[in-house]
Structure formats: C-alpha cells, structure tokens
Amino acid sequence: MLRPDLFAFGAVMTSPRLSPATLGSLKKGIGVPNYDRATVTPGIVHLGIGAFHRAHMAVYVDDLLAEDPSWGIVGASLRRPDTKEALEPQGGLYTIAVRDAEGTHPRVIGSILSVMDANTERDALLDLMASPNIRIVSLTVTEKGYCHDPATGELDQRHPDIVHDLANPGAPKSAPGMLVEALARRKAAGIAPFTVMSCDNLPSNGETAKRIVTRFAALRDADLGEWVKSVAFPSTMVDRIVPSTTDADREEVKNLIGAEDSWPIMTEPFTQWVIEDHFPSGRPAFEKVGGQLVKDVEPFEHMKLRMLNGSHSTMSYLGYLGGYQYIAEVMGDPAYVKLIHGLMTEEAMPTLDMPGVDLGAYRDQLLERFRNPALKHRTWQIAMDGSQKLPQRLLGTIRDRLKAGQPITRLALGVAAWMRYVTGVDEDGNEIDVRDPHALKMMAISADAGDDPVALFEGLSSLTEVFGTDLAGNAVFRDTVVGHLESLFDEGAKATVAEVAA
Image (cartoon, rainbow, N blue to C red):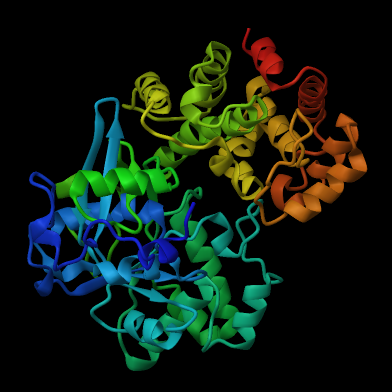
C-alpha cells in the first residue's frame, strides 16, 4: 500500500484533491457536511486519530455540528504523522465509504478541524488541551497505548515511555503522560478538568484509563494525583468494523466522488456506541444520533469483547493458518461458521448477564456482519497485537468458565491458534509477519520449543503479562490448549476446526 503522504503529493493527479475548495464540485448526490465549517470551534481533542475514530466517533460528531458547532474535533497523532500529512491538504475532510452487498456508499465528513503531530507540535497540543474550550479529550490509542499490564490493568511503571515521561513531565511521549501534563496545566491555571473518554476495546475502559492516569499523576506529584481523582472517565463500548484502506479503495472512492482522497475510510453499515453518561463539563447530544447513554457500560463491553472480539480473534488466527486472507472467506467455510456459532452460543453467552438483551439475535447479527463480502477485513490485520488482546477477548471468558467447572473447548482453540500463529511460521513453512509488542520474545520462546506443543505452551503461558499467574498451572486449561496445539501441528488448522466443530 502506498504511504498516504506519498500518494498525496505524487506527480500524477487525474482528479482534483478533496478540500474545502472542491467540496462543491463533487459528483451529484455525494453527502457533504450540512453546516458551515467556518463556524465550528474545537471542543474535543482526540488522541490517536486513526481509521477507527474517523469511522466512528467523528461521524457521530459530524451528525451533530449543525445543531451545536462548538464540538469540533482536533485530532492528534502520537506516533506517526501520516494522518496529518493525508488530511492537512484536505482541510481535515475525508470520505467515509460504507460497503454492503449492494455497493459502496460515500459521504464526506467535516468534523475534524485539524490534525496535530504530537512529536513536532507537542507544546501547542498541550496548550490546546489545557484550554477551557476543550471539554472532552478522547482516546483511541489501542491496548498498547495505555502503557499498562494487560493482565492486571495497572500502569507499567517500567514502560520506556512512562520512565521517560516521569523524568520529563513537560515533554511527554505517552498518552497517560500527555493527559496528565495537560491536566496539570489546567490545575495551575485554575481551569476545571476536561472529561477523559476512552474509545478503545478494553474492559471497563474508563476505569482502566482512570487507574492508569491517576497512578501516573500521583507518581509525578501527590497533590496533582489527588486533583486528578476528580476527573471524569466515562466508560464506552464502541463497535464498527474498519478494514485497512488499500490503493484500490482510494481509486474506487475517487471514481465515486470525483476527487482524490488521500485516506478514505472503508467500513460497514453497522455502528454502535454505548456511553456512560458522566460528563461534568458537558457533551454533545450523542443520544440524538444513535449513541446509547447508559449508567453502566460494563455488560455491553463484556458482550462485545466476548462475542464479537473473541470470535474475531479466533477466526483471525485459525483463518490465517487455514489460508484465508479475509474474514468473509473464513465465513465461507461451514466448519469455521459452526465453530464460531458454537463458541458464542455454548461458551461465551452463558457467561453474560444481559437482562432484556436478546443475545441470540446479537449473535446472528454478528455472523451476518462477518459474512459481508464487500468488507475486506484481513485476518492478518485482526491478528496484530494479540498479546494485548487475548486477556480481554478470550482469557476472561475462559477464567469464568473454569471457575464454574464448564468446558472451554472452543475458546481454548482460539488460544492455541494464537500460540501456533506467533511461532512466525505458517503451515507451509512460510514466514508470518507477526506484529506484536512481544513478538521477539514470543518468537524466541517458539524457536526454543520447536514443534513441541508442551514446550510451546509452557513457554508462552509463562508470559504473566498475558496469562497472569493463574492459567499456566490450571490443568484443564493446560490440557485443552496443548491438545489443540498437537492437532494444529499434526493436522493443520482446517482439519482441527472441522474436528472441534463436529
């Protein structure tokens, strides 16, 4: 895939570039902002402005700006400047392209006023976050961006970025460091704190963010730590499938709208956002555009993490090992469908307490979404950062079932498939590009274990940052995962899936 900045500034441009100046010349029928962007002012800073934010929260905000233009978004890239380089020449405009069996339906989103690069504009970004006009700072920084131990949810005080930020509080690199420095500036200026809203796939993401941020603040300064305890950290549950954008996608969007878009976002029709209604400094009227404002998000989080995300991860590892590039291809294999249906129905759903929610209907909706042939969601993409995702997506459900004395057959297969995947070699002997914070450590363990399933299990399950201290010694967990690993090595993913699903 071409880098967006190279694409944007390439020599060959066959169509005008999407921008405020070309908005009026797009093809007829293309949805565009229904408000005057010149009147929009920033009320939200979003840290980690990747594809998911632009397919999800930014769309909800875009729907509300005609009614209240004080909630514009300023995005911040914490690691790479590619989003800024793609959107800056477009005045923050981009296309969201919704795909279903009937085709691709584009719309231009205008809620992002600008994007800042935290590496080169750190002080300006911190000053903006400290401004009283900013009432919400939201996050989509992925699990690893929280600089925490996924197994415990606590701040990892040995994380290099945390060590740096504690030594250099005025020049933070990490998301927790950025939040605390901006809050410290507000405290010093006598300005009320902003609300911190996590939009990441973490259990009790608001509580997790609060625990990490308040701990970091206390390590910086005890007084500041006490003040930060007053900050609101509402939890949210977010859901929308957002595949990586390809050059073919860019070409399709260009033909549909009549303009070049350096980084359009491809997604599905479905979108869901459940939000804990706790915003002392105010919030947009999300409930008017489909947001579900509730007192307790946790049951919805568990439902999604255990049914959607747990299934997604299981399909990604088993699907990749079975030679399937996309989730829709995985769903074309009846054995895989039966396995995932059983995982949700027999193992995940019994661990959920959701009065008034039809879990069977939710399951069927998920299976239908997974089948969407227009959504090119790569198994390799979903497989990234598995060491950070497994604790929330599979291991929590496994712990609940082990405690209840219930079988974990399908869930354990997802864990075994992850262990087989992170060896870095597929069933044909080809290299797997394993993207994970612990990739080198895991591949070293795999190299020592060779094709010995017991040694592989013992090595990988000893990673307490993934498995905690309880699972490696649990005989049921050990025996079930090792049995699946033996089958994956001896028979391969497809045969193993067929056997377990039977």
